Length: 172
Image 1: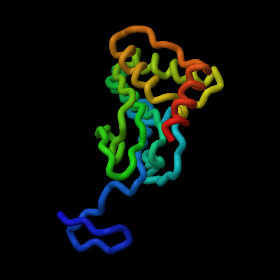
Image 2: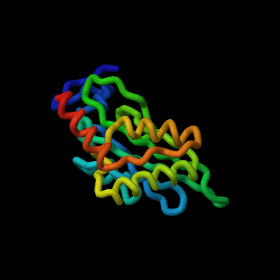
Image 3: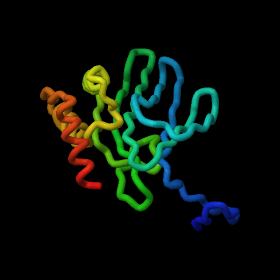
Image 4: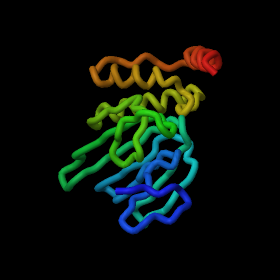
């Protein structure tokens, strides 16, 4: 299939490129059945598709926590949290369901008890008056590894955050 440049009319049968420089996440809410939501992340735009579906967009380098949960008549059948960094055009990325094109995967946890623990980590960061969008990516990788192995996660403190901000400033 052929692609047409942005702003030009696509020939019949052509597909527009999915990546416009922004990362899109499809949010679905079917109460008590299927729920996708953003736990944190700075939303740059939003498009309502239907009463139950909307698409939110994020600028490159945004850090986003995306939670997915589904259930049937007998209870939860799937729960997952992904913390991703929105990629820039041309960067390599990992595909994540409902995230277009994908992102740099910092944390990916499945199973309600582990997802709940990840949500508690986010709550603790916010309780320390820190913005989870600004947390060092290495902390999310650390949390992923520790949660995956059932080990305790090292707390993200104001001191660690200050060290991250200094390290980040040196790299820019």
